Length: 473
Ligand SMILES: Cc1cc2nc3c(=O)[nH]c(=O)nc-3n(C[C@H](O)[C@H](O)[C@H](O)COP(=O)(O)OP(=O)(O)OC[C@H]3O[C@@H](n4cnc5c(N)ncnc54)[C@H](O)[C@@H]3O)c2cc1C
Image 1 (tube, rainbow, N blue to C red):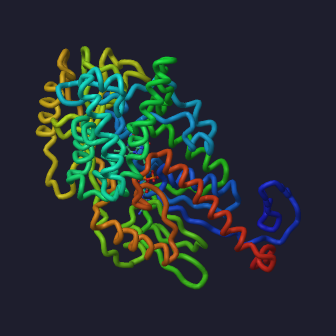
Image 2 (image 1 turned 180 degrees about the horizontal axis):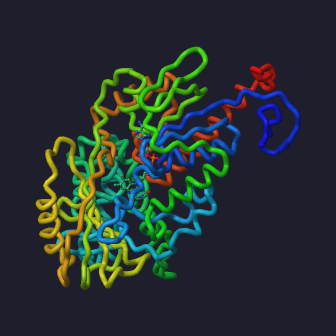
């Protein structure tokens, strides 16, 4: 065991072991929230020598929005269970990938009349579903809208610019967006397009579609290879993450609900229900309004969010679709997406395990599970899905604050409120922490960037005058 006087200092490319040096006052960094962002950020910051890292998570396990509630002996998920092999989390936690299940990912959409296509759409699928004439109209509409909506100053203008009016209205994209937010498309800020729809717009873009179709005609595309979270659920994935964090010296505190942050001339005082400790820097990945409350500054804008109701089903029979993910681009039902877990994990007791996601608008009142179930079943049957077999509703999960809402009239105020928190001294990062509509891969990438910033700050703070400051003894 090292004494404080003979600490081992690790520099990026310069390991100095066992050298007798006076103890250095290590910079202490508090990371609030142990979801994807907090976990990746903590380990990367530790490895980059950004300081001693303490990770505070109020739940008894890490994972945040990544949850796999067990229902009828099967771990379902509240969101997507699959990751791309180039997800940044595998770079930071390389051993993690061994716990994942590889499978061919098929993602489809269902539109009016139960017509199915590859997500979000394919030229061949569109022609098959709508006929050559409509496809020609769609092509003409894309060309016209490239000119008519060239300013791209509203969300509908951006969508029409990329996919044209015929596809936007008739292909179900407008329904999908409005269902997600329970708002009219013109009430949603264009920021949504850059956050949520970059890939979708890119995929649906004419040039991209054309190139993809040419490539498919030349060499039929295999399904995308994806990695599904460990068979036992996200809990297992985050248990592996917690082990790696602890092994590399991150101080992981679960069941540590941060209840207040104050500051003085020597740093930040972070209080949990157990104790108060001093830190040199604080990064928050917990919801922005909670951070504002912790530091006791007023915020002016409502940070509105959509909650998500997930229904968990078993289904015996032919579900009527051949995919892991089916997105609802039709006009019917409140459901957004259906996920079948059989692809990566196989059927469990001959049953398909299916989850269904239903966005709930803010202020939509108490949740009526049976009404949501009836609405989903009526819609699915009208679209020819889950007709041939027996379905059973086994449970549900409510995720508050699942998606941030960017209203056109609120975005500037949201940014001002976030800036006020940053000006106070707290660094913001993550899906809820920065009110940022990011996928888990983008959350991890942003966490890596934040860790690098902390490392730069630490290097600046270690001026020659304080680098080898004698210990208080
Ligand atoms: C329903 C749903 C579906 C999704 N689907 C997909 C998808 O298909 N593909 C994809 O890539 N991404 C998807 N995502 C996004 C992905 O899950 C998130 O981007 C990612 O998990 C965000 O991680 P985070 O660490 O930023 O936030 P979070 O997971 O929210 O972590 C924040 C943590 O802070 C903790 N906390 C809060 N308050 C305190 C406090 N006072 N003290 C201490 N700790 C506190 C919370 O317990 C939580 O663990 C989905 C998300 C949801 C909700």
